[in-house]
Image (cartoon, rainbow, N blue to C red; front, top):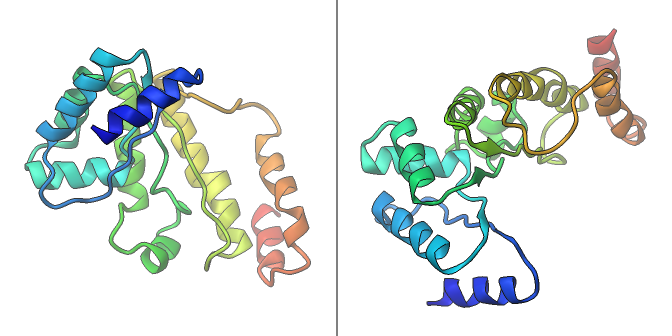
Length: 193
């Protein structure tokens, strides 16, 4: 099929990782995805990095199975790691405005903790530049995101990004250029106070 043609092309030029994200289709079942993963693994020597937390939560609802059971089935079929999509900004006020039908902050963190508890790895993302304030960007990076890293560290499953002294300051430094243009700058400074 078309999926295999693209993967064949990827492997032919030296690619080693496949990202599959299919959204929230109301009729595509867990069995469809587990069959697809098995076929990919049978045909290609690739790392499968697929299914964001919102997709996993959706599969859980559609299949009427717990998230853990969904993840176990996907892992057994060949899923190697999970992308951090759906995090947006891990602040519910922002998520309720920009993605009200997606996974809540708490559920996103819970799904990723389950992923790591099963010995798998995941990544995390941050989508900014919508309705969030600078303070909420910092909250994402400083409080919620670090809580995620703590959960990941418990299971030794972090896939990217070092964690060490000064990381919180780096979050602030990377946003320094926004301070003159963002009215929330004073609020962010007060938060870090």
